[in-house]
Every structure is written in structure tokens, then in C-alpha cells.
Length: 164
Image 1 (cartoon, rainbow, N blue to C red):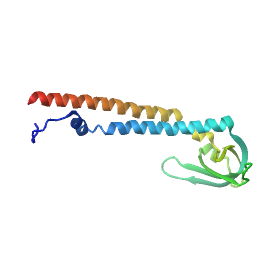
Image 2: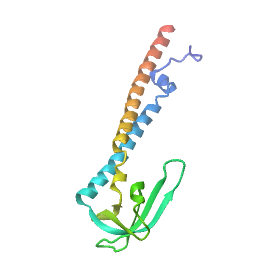
Image 3: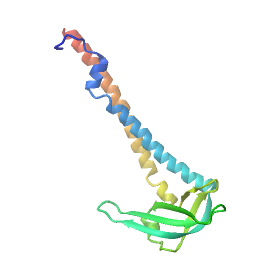
Image 4: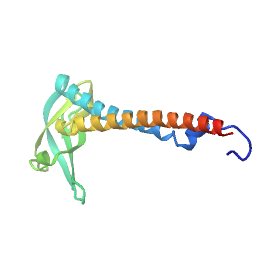
């Protein structure tokens, strides 16, 4: 029963049922999927037309936490334009354990943009399929949840209209 005598609308009912959550889920799913696809495309670009050179490790950093530890590598490598191009990447533990300060490291870079470089292509594509599955789950949940919210809102408005 409405106290001020105004008729309840479907949009008002949807807002009270928090329909705004579902477009956020869809947007999060799309964004998350796009980030992972971007990493996958970057890896493909390195493999297709990237240049592989041997660089030098300038700094190794391991962050120890109660979560999985993180491993970062800073390196320097030579390109045609700059013999002192720098890069940094988070890597997998398996690669990190094989490296030492001042030691050699394989570096892939794109000839048209050497600032785009990587040393652990596997880290870029890590969890690719899991990420896409989670992304699809977020999108599906947002779409189905939004659909049910619209259905409930319509039913609520119809029920309120029949009660008066």
C-alpha cells in the first residue's frame, strides 16, 4: 500500500530490487575478459612478429606473503634504436628460480614499439581459460539476474495494481 497515493512503477520496483547490480556484473565480466584477451593478444604478437634477444637481469625481487609469493624481474636489453632499453615483468616462480642478478635472460620485444617487451610469455597467458570462464560467469549472472529482477518488478506492480 502506497502512503502518498502514487502508483508504483516497474522502474521504481526494479530500483528497489537493486537492478543496478546486474549491469555492474556484466560490465565487470566484459572488462575482466578484455584484460585477459589483451594479454593473450600481446603474447601472440610477441610470438608472431616479436624479436627475441638476450638481455641482462638488473634486479630480482621476491615478495613473500601469506598469499602466493610474487616474483618480479627488471632487465636491460639492446634494440636497434637503444642499446639500453629497460623492462620489468612479474614472472612465474619456475623462471625466477633460474635467474641471477647480472645473468642472461631471453627478452621478446616488438620492433615497432620496444617498450612492449616481456620475458615470461607464459605468465601473460596464465589462467587464460579460467579467467574467460569467470568472465562468462559474471556476464551470465548479470544477464539472468537482471532478467529475473525485471520479471519480479513487473509481477510486483501487477500485484499491487490488482490489490487496490
